[in-house]
Image (cartoon, rainbow, N blue to C red; front, side):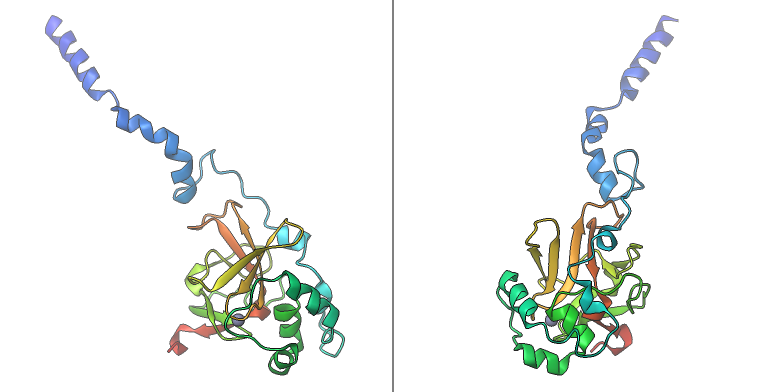
Length: 219
Ligand SMILES: [Zn+2]
């Protein structure tokens, strides 16, 4: 009897969770955010409507009018260039950009317009390959980092190293992303929305700013 009780006590003390097993409690929220299915710690994902609710400035540029209307906005161009960071290695005058870009590309890449949600060529497109800047051809994103955010624009959780530049919008509410090489406007980046991606970031990018190159055609 006595021995049995001793034994039980001993076993109980052995089976006590070691401190190490208890300690991870503190780090659980972090690991669950990064890895697992979210317990209570991970908030329900807010509807990814940040873009749709507050479209990137000036939708006028994205109207289907393919004519002169959207083309000449020198005032706007001048304004935007004053808020963008120093240009990358690819520099062209407004006239040069107009010569090589379609009006839609010019309006978005150079004048920071936004295409209508759900209309972009790459919104629901998940082929394997890379996405280059439609302006200068610099590789920006791998298809393996693209995910379906449901927001109406292509979404990536991560850009290629050094390819994407982040700049706070003047109103401080959002962060613009641009091609680091040519300064072309891509869209905006949103962080901490609860998407189960390795970075919990969403690069919300206009399809028109991108040019997809299938894996089979990569050099
Ligand atoms: Zn570029």
